Image (cartoon, rainbow, N blue to C red):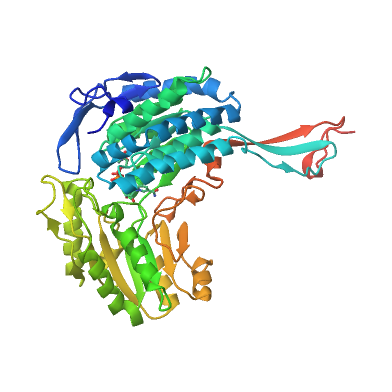
Length: 511
Ligand code: NAD
């Protein structure tokens, strides 16, 4: 049984607060919704959602907190993140259990998600001593030209259901060391994870004397809450993770006020399997990437582009693996594929398969499972669909385990098929031929933000920048120099001489 008290919940019988500004949790004044476990469709809690007026209060509190937080030296801000990591390490298992309950992930993946939070904390703590700018040669005598990176302001984070902890953590841990308070609107499908995260963060804040609790707030709600954040002039940055239509709506609102958006949107990730590929590795990588999290990762493998010479045998071997997949209650030992998030998701999967059938697809699997799984959950056999690359359905991200298999003859053809979709998140090639691998990584190769060789499309490490191109939105989060999106770059010119030379040799009022 979940030890919910350790995560700050007294009883799930009572409605949960939809607003948590700093350390003060309040009932939302909006609609009451039920939180449903995808494992068996049971109601596990109810939440009073935030209203736009309450969102404004959270943003106002974050703006107040910013005035102080921006002046705290970055390594001290890092100390907060270090203490958050201590809380997360202590509560790793219980938080993973909550992810399983609320998002339906198998324990291995739920633990991996919490580990991502720990990893990004470690990264952010180191980063807190490395927020460096350049010193640049000035063309003028006795002048210094340099850049500083300064805190940007409160950040609004809108996140998706499928990584109910990690996506916020990637943003928040980096944002905090950069000096930015965070106002988080989690998915209304996974609000308990957000409340648990807020509880752990506030516990860490309470151990330090100089941290305004309002550096982290949570507002739970639907589109109106997201749009209130997106339109708020006091949030210089909106980081939005979710579907492409959501990103388009959020980016449009943010653009109206000329704010910054950091977009992490849908993917339609492809893998090329070349004739020289190590098929043992490829099949394991395909299976993890295509059916892991029941096909509900932004980096899920959705398109397999296989050389004609190996396509028949690869499909046959994959079907064999798919036949043996343990599917069911994620809490049961050995299960590798849990439920879809809800029945709407199951219906979208069936509709996509029907469309694929009409467009000439040959379908293996994909049917709903009703025996041997908890009643009330939506469990499916992952599908393999052999289809032409010209079929319109392969252009779409259906957030469910459907793997489209297409065939190619030349590598150029494979790359053309691969790049011919509107999304550009993650991609991979399996080949033992280094010329093919390097070509795929080159400017003429994959057009995605993540391009892998001999590993699958999902399961990124936090050390690299994460994100994609085209309709995936162009944002980068997590490691590398993604932190720069959360800061304000300031260029300084300092004259330490006694004259006033102008740049470009311009002469003005000098005798
Ligand atoms: P979603 O777009 O339905 O919802 C995401 C968040 O946006 C939720 O908090 C939701 O309430 C909010 N929202 C929805 N419409 C909005 C609007 N018009 N204005 C403001 N806020 C709005 O996505 P989902 O179903 O929760 O998640 C699945 C999607 O997220 C998939 O497309 C997946 O690929 C994508 N995703 C992308 C990444 C990435 O890093 N690229 C990571 C995780 C998920």
